[in-house]
Amino acid sequence: MITRALAHRRGALLLFGVAALIPVFVRDAYFLDSLVLILLWGALSAAWNVAGGYAGQVSIGHAAFFGIGAYSAALLGTRFQQSPWLGMLVGVALSLVAGGAIGYLSNRLKGPYFALSTIAFSQVLLIVASRWRAFTSGSEGIPVPFRPGFASLGLGHVAWVYLALAVAVLYWGVQVWLEHSRFGYRLAGVREDEDAAQALGIPARRLKVIAVMTSAALTSVCGTLWAQYIGFVDPFYVFSVDLSVRFALNAIIGGMGTALGPFLGSILITSLETYLRATLSGVQSGFTGIYLIVYGTVLILVVRFFPDGLAGLAARLRARWARAHA
Amino acid sequence: MSAPAPLLTLEAVTKRFGGLTAVREVSLQVQPGDLLGIIGPNGAGKTTLFHMISGYYPPDEGRVTFDGRDITGQPAHAVSRLGLTRTFQIVKPFGNLSVLDNVMIGALTRRSSTRAARTDAERVIDICDLGRHAAARARALPLALRKRLEVARALATQPRLLLLDEVMAGLNPTELIAMVALIRRLHANGLTLIVIEHIMAAMMRLAQRIVMLHHGEKIAEGTPREITSDRRVIDAYLGEEFVLADA
Image 1 (cartoon, chains in turn orange, yellow):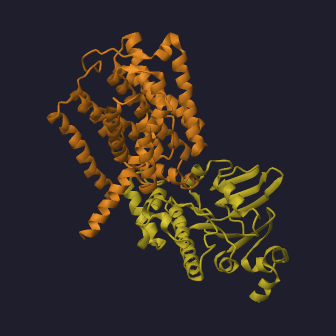
Image 2 (cartoon, one colour):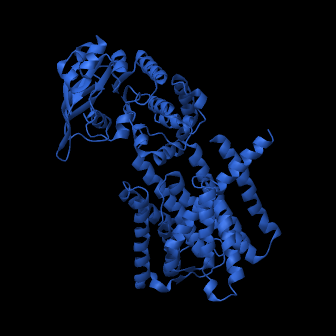
Image 3 (cartoon, chains in turn yellow, purple):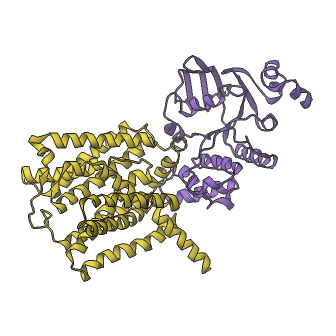
């Protein structure tokens, strides 16, 4: 475990180091925008990974917490003129409650049944957000006004890069902690075999709920940031199953239960998607969904040939290199 | 036979699954330092009894007392924390983790730092003679080693009473001898054990006392010698050949 984490640390150093240097040399808004999204989507997958990868609680409803974070800040900002930072805190509080509730209620559910219950939960929130016109503006969504300044999260591209980078590194650190701490070891036991974990004195259910709550809170923070960055909250997007699947797939493609995996997955998928969108946007609308086909193809290839994801592939290549040079 | 403070007491514990009574009014006592064997044909209720002792099934009736404390219906993790740990007949290794990590997770029940837990785990791995496999993925181990890992992981929680559920089943004669030796060593070091086993030859050499279950009921209890000459045990379980072979 130690050597694996150290190897990751070098990879992480390189990855986050490059991300930190890019704004120094590159001023192209389009490129910086992609970088912010790569970091944010990576952080979101890392948040998902805390429950899905480290605790084995594979959720396809994490958009629920993303949406809670997005809506909390947008509603507090537009209806009560509050700072999005306060909205972020409110979102975290609500997500902790929601994550605790869903974690507790679906505690006995395993595998696909847990995943289904999380989908149902996010769909309930979608219906509430899109129908409760008086409060959420319903399906019209909420435009988030741009007010310059750090307190209102009205930032330029460079500032956004560093904010997203800070969040990404923090989430990466949470995962590394999970690989080395008592809590993380015991959580791995719960993930591998719940009955055996209990026989060893581990309160399996409690650990799972804590993992889901943590994952929910981290997701919610990114939901708030994303809404402030993009400037618009659409219920059909922020609570969508598509979004939940994206969190999960980035982590699966990058390597579930690895600290760097979600970021590797995000780099691959986000850049691929951005590139395809850009090159195909001029073509007829028949092609607009083509990135989904690419997405699916990449997923099939990864699951078939690198079942432990890009992080696993990197580890294998490194081992081969070490053998060849031994 | 009855010392003042038994470590474990079962009082008429019963478990029903619908119309089937898996365990019916079984009572027994385990003194500190005992090595109690439980035998019985398949479906006799041996594993169900373990499930009730270790907190996986609450008994429908009766009471389980561990070290003077009523643990009836307590969850498994709480029972384990009190010092009563079990292994599983169908081994449940943490398959994607190394042997060392597996045992460390057991040790972390008593340790707050991973460093101390690693030291504990290494010691237990040595005791169980798993040192050469410490870095191997648990999933990749052959059955004999996975059985030993099951014991090692449970030992790492520093139990005062260890329940072993058929840790010898499926082992070849050499592996069997090693496992018997390991259990003897643990017992000699003061650990109290309850052992479920089908292999009578091993049980005869190990257990001080044997309880025989049949159709969920305790039909006999005694020293190995008493048990093997008990008519009901011979009829229900051993068969005439065993008696002849033993004589």
